[in-house]
Image 1 (cartoon, rainbow, N blue to C red):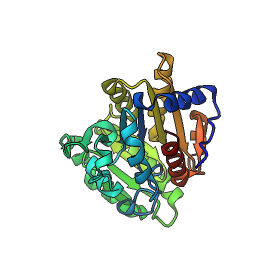
Image 2: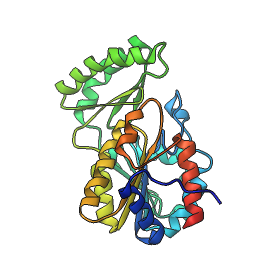
Image 3: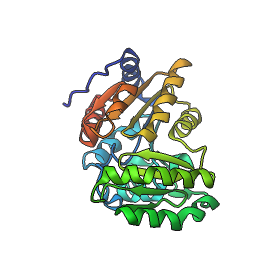
Image 4: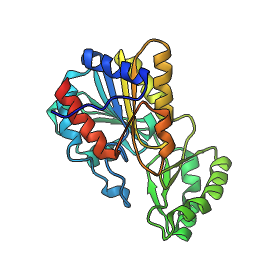
Length: 272
């Protein structure tokens, strides 16, 4: 039997204890890239860690709700994660585009808004800026993500692109979200904290766990802090990396990247 790691904070330990005591009242939610799936140079090649989905399939029937909350299009993550076609995951919800899109495993239905005008307006200029630095643009339908990981000097490309992309975002009513060698332009008002909070309310969860690895996950970690303040226990799990070392300070438990998240899920499946 795998050993569950012990959270570093009292609040985190209380959240884990609540989850273990009443899993049927718990909501478990995770980011995809860098959390359930290792970060790769080409986002189209991302795949869930081989131990993650089987562990989630064991956990899902025992908890109140299971979700993946991602900045990617929901259907893209369903395909890359291999989440479709698992009867045990019938209760899974994938919230894409920071919660603007929704895919439900039970029905296979995808709800997705049309791309905002600002994204279409900046597309050509974003492509040109990315090409100059050897970066890659990922079209997320209602957002554009500029990945610098494949540039000759990823960090230099990231710095070079930050200012012009921010100006583009400001000029077209968009938000610029920095991440792990990625700069994303997306509509304002979309974040994982809002998505997680709304899902917790909709499911009536009495305990909430969220796992993430990047700056875009901070709003979800903050949402758990707010839920704790009104009496709902929670556990914040950091999929640790050297690229975003400061994220550990905002969480209760740090594990070693997606491999550590998968090991945590396997141990959790054995305990509940």
